[in-house]
Amino acid sequence: MKRRILPRAISCLALAILVGGWFLTAEQRDLSKKIVRLHVVANSDTSGDQAVKLKVRDAVLAEAGRLLEGHTADAKEALRAGLPAIEAAADRCLAAQGSGERASAALRRELFPTREYDTFSLPAGTYTALRVTIGKGEGHNWWCVVFPSLCMSSSMDEFEEAARTAGLTDGEIGLITEKDEGCTLKFRSLELLGKLRAAFRK
Image (tube, rainbow, N blue to C red):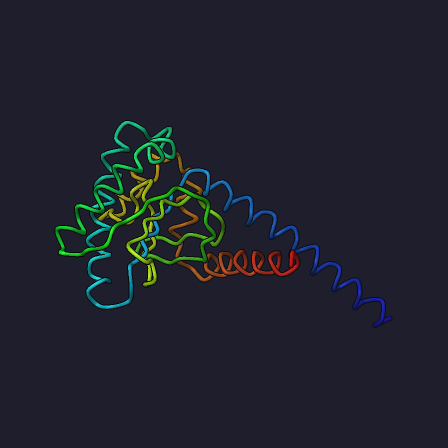
């Protein structure tokens, strides 16, 4: 009897993981269609290069904000067309800081781990990202969201308003702002599922 129960239990567990994984992946995929992440990579890990990275981040966010004015429906296209302007803004910032490095900007798909910020969290998964690399790009990076401007929101009301400009539903806003353990476990499960899939592809 026990020999029959064990395989059934394993099968039920596997099915639950598959179904749960499908729903988690669908939620992340819906979010990724509406969000553009920001990935700024420092030249190195020296304190000077890390400080410059934050200045470049601010310059990039300001230029991206200008490019995105009136383009909430086609944010990715606006950023793609504005990549030269974003690079120029980053290079002006670097020159102002006395750095001899140059920056490069690209819009591409990147795999992100689960990230927890002050007012929200984002599940692991593949997102469109504005990647700005300073010099050799060998230092620690800074991750956040360039569209909508979630990381610069100073209050929850501003955060929710910015999120809705990107077309996030109330359910999606609730998902990423939920701070309970269930939400954290859900996001970590999605990250683990992605790693398992990657392992099976090898």
